[in-house]
Amino acid sequence: MCGIVGFVGSEQAAPILLDGLERLEYRGYDSAGIAVISDDKKIIVKKAKGRLNVLRDMINGGKSIAGTIGIGHTRWATHGEPNDINAHPHLSGDGKIAVVHNGIIENYVELRDFLISQGYTFKSETDTEVVAQLIAFYYAECGNALEAVFRVLRRIEGAYALGILCIDEPEHFIAARKDAPLLIGYGEGCNFIASDVTAIIKHTRDVSYMEDGEVAVISADKVQFYNAMEQPIEKAHNTIDWDVSAAEKGGYAHFMLKEIMEQPEAIRKTAFSRIRDNRIVFEDLKFTAEQIKDVSRIFIIACGSSYHVGVVGKYNLERLMRKPVEVCLASEFRYCDPLVDDKSLVIVISQSGETLDTMAALREAKARGAYILSIVNVVGSSIARESDDVLYTWAGPEIAVATTKAYSTQLILLDMLGLYFADALGKVSKDQYDDIIEQILCLPDKMEQMLEDIEDIKHFASNYFNQNSVFFIGRNLDYAMGLEGSLKLKEISYIHSEAYASGELKHGTISLIEDGTLVIALGTYEPLFDKAMSNVVEVQARGADVLALTIENNVAEMKKTVENVISVPETHTILQPSLGVVPLQLFAYYVALLRGCDIDKPRNLAKSVTVE
Image (cartoon, rainbow, N blue to C red; front, side):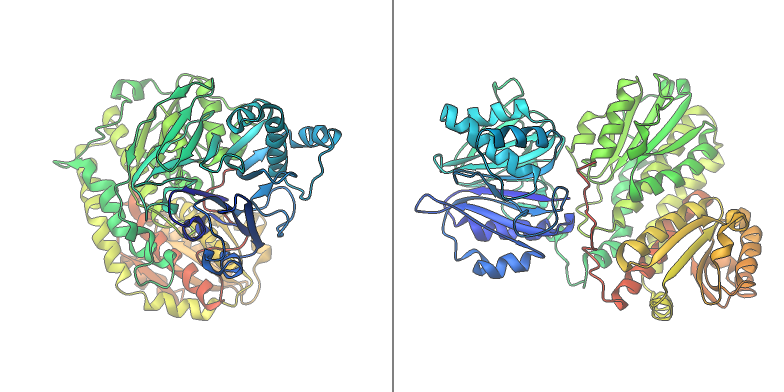
């Protein structure tokens, strides 16, 4: 959530800042703004509540603001309601300092009271204005912006990624980071900061990732880094290897639809390079076969869709490895005094690699002696850097807030990891192993087959888009898959939706079923198909309108009970959710489309959640 971009060079800054903010819209926001040091040495701030187009129209696409250095921000409200005043950037009272900020300053009330006692006044309700005013306070004492920033960082508590302008030092701006993502981009005669590489990929592929406690001074021809001890340091450069077109719609109406269609190729990239001679090979994995034998318990830690990957993973890893697996919501993990020790393997899953709750849980597990293996998409992200081991999904940029291809690549990678460990433990036969590998290699082709004919899904979406409440039911892996299908629907269509284990219906939930209630019955898990059918009969008897999902071999049997059926190709049982989730994604997409929703940027949601 929230996005930062900064630029210094010879070109006009405002249009570049607007372009960068547009590429960060997917992160979720409710206001946007920029600050530019003008040619006559004034800080010009323009900001507005609402979508970026409001700001763009206000400043004529950036043409009305002249200046070659500036910072920009898209804000997702935490302190103070979404409005023009609380939007970033924030200025100090004397107009000398401008600040953009991602994160939360936990002791801002104490600092605000101190500044008020010193005669400072505040216009906004935000913690960020406190940062701007505090920098101004120390700048008045020392006359050096960098020193003032260091003094402020010693006093503030919490998470921050900061971009800072000082009117008296118009040749550079300052960046600082702790527990919130921030990177530096190197251009020809210009340099950038950004909270996400998508903001600047149009201009450069050469970046450095800032670490916690680091500060950078960025001018057009130089970037100087400082560590937490305020000593100058050198930083490694990284090359972004995906094409800018990957962050564009490519003819699709929405990024979400594009990313659904990209899933077969994404799975190929994730899986195929790790299979050689029909064996799974994790070249970069340091965790050994001997170590997995000593593990007493596996924890999977994640949030949102990544948590749902973990629920599927619990079923599959326990079935394959015969070791206990516990799936934990990252936001709850460190508050439950978890039973983690040096015999624990903790698998951390995050698309962005910057999710703050997940990072905090990682640190808690690490402090208790666990071995941390992360599954992330973003190379060099904070979670990747703080883990003992990391497996990258290589899904490429995912712009839509509602994840699709990141979910699918996390899922296949976790399945492969389970099979890899099961083989090391001697818990899977050669025939089983070979069969699963063969089916993994067939998975993208089967997915492409499904995506070539989606007319039935469009038809069912047109029948059901006006529902007020939808229930997903299933057993075992179908229940786990239903969690994600339900989340997709509620995320982008705003329809109330819940997923339940079918066997739990009679323990309370069935009281909510009435005439016309849509129940999406999942019957792709072959071992429990008959039991799933009995639950379908239960909800139909109470007036439910049932839409069923099953494998092709069971369509005829399903249609004996349910009129409306979607089918998916059959694959190995543990891989079936990889195929089954696709029509659920498409159903959610077309329902949201028919309801006129903002599919790529659903209300109140953010792509990367960097506050707790």
